[in-house]
Amino acid sequence: MLTFFVIVPVLIAVFLYMLPSNKGAKFLALLFQSALTAFAFYLVLSVRSEPITVFVGTYDDVLGIILRADALAAAFVMLTTFIFLLVSVYTFNEEESRTFWFLLFILEAALIGLFFTRDMFNVFVLAEVSTVVIAVLLMFDRGKRNMFFGMVLLMVNVIAMQFYLLGLGYIYMLTGVMDMAYATERISAMNRADVVLPYALIMTTIGFKCALIPFLSWTPKVRVYPKAPTAVMAILSGLQIKSAIYLFLRFQDIFDIVAPHQLFLVIGIIASLFGAFMAICQTDIRMILAYHTISQVGLIIIGISAGNYYSYIGGLYHIIGHAMFKVPLFLSSGIIVHSYGTGDVYKVRGVLKRMPLVGIGSIAAVLGITGAPLFIGSISKYFISYDVPPLFNAITIIISLGTIISFIKYSYIFFGHSNLKGDIPVAEKCRTIPTLVLGIVCLVGGIFGTLFIDFLFHAQVSISISGYIQKSGIYVLSVVAGFLIYKKLIKGNAALVRFGAVNFNFKTVCLAMSAFFALILVTVSFL
Image 1: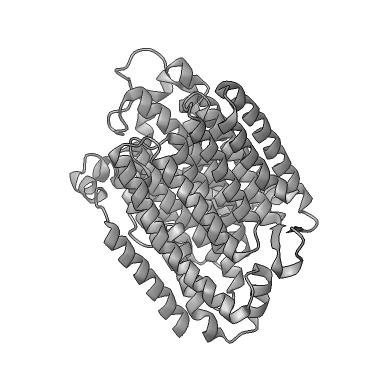
Image 2: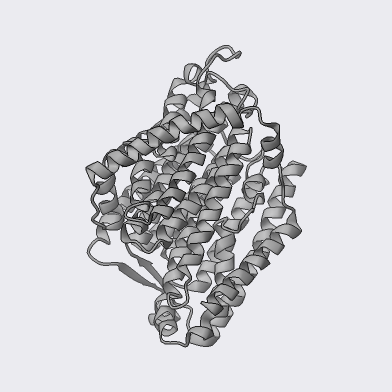
């Protein structure tokens, strides 16, 4: 069953590339992708009793390729298949190239394989495959600027993965295995000092992939530029970065004897505050969304590093929620930019009147990401800040306030009057479906949040009515405060715009990775 999830996207990719009838092939591909999504839901139910393990080939134990699906892996696979289904619907009339569709489903296969594999070297291979595919998709337009951004992404990722490869070699030298389960068992019995170096090496790569390295402005800038396909931007922000968070969770468990949870709690706070502030400084709607990817990932890391069961569950649910509201925001931004001819947040107006379905889906996503009551973000943020110290709670409120301020700026695009005449082009009307569907999920995932959490992660949690009302009151006050701050301090502030344009070159990124490695190494060594 598990091999089926990896093979089917590859077969769809080959099928799309070989068939001459592009339109008919895409219909069949959507049908197969729908079936794969349905099986992913079934997989989530199947692993509730016990994980599923498959030995690929004739080798047993650690010599063979082992695929394993537990509740966490199954939830990530379900998220992947669902998002790829909606992105495929969105791209149906936008992209006619068979090569594009081939690469899209190869990327899906690589991500699913990464979630299932139990072999740490296979993680390296699949991560590299997904990076190469993403880079090619970014360079798909073949313009000079596209080629530049794609090559920068490749080169920086090559350097980042060398840290992982060195750490992996060190682990193999110490344990003699590449299997995660066996490595976990053997590392737990080792001297703590022996595994500090491989842990620091591997977590540097994962921290880079998660965009956790502080002040890493290249992450949104290299992934969001005018010629990048909208579907690729949505997958990058809403899905691919989740693979790095998944690896973060897995390797924190493997290296539990040395994992500095408090350090990552602080790093998560810095990343989240930095991402929210940089989003406030942006004037392009896609750059606002891109910087909020860093902010929301930081919030996820805060939740899973807080050492609190409810906060951990909140962090896991925020992974799902982030995809549910970030993907429709990126997809709708593609429609808006194409229709208006600009992504300037001060020039786009009247989206709700000009394209009502896109506006409704986007507003639902905005309410989700800001944590509005009854929406999915309110549930995950409620659990992240559940039963935590006052200082920790105050920090999460400040992070949420930063998110609210930037989306107050963003939300002006929905109202007012547009100078453009006519409705959106007919070809784009089918692209409103994914945005609207995910907007509905943002609401349903909030109303039935605890049921969703039980279904996805097999975790039983409850919500205090009085506590939720208190959080809702804080949200309302934050909206009022955010509106006043935006009006008095943010709107038209040229200094913030100049700060938001700060850029980091290739050398700076490499130095940041080295500093991140040194920080982890020193912290773990002396704690």
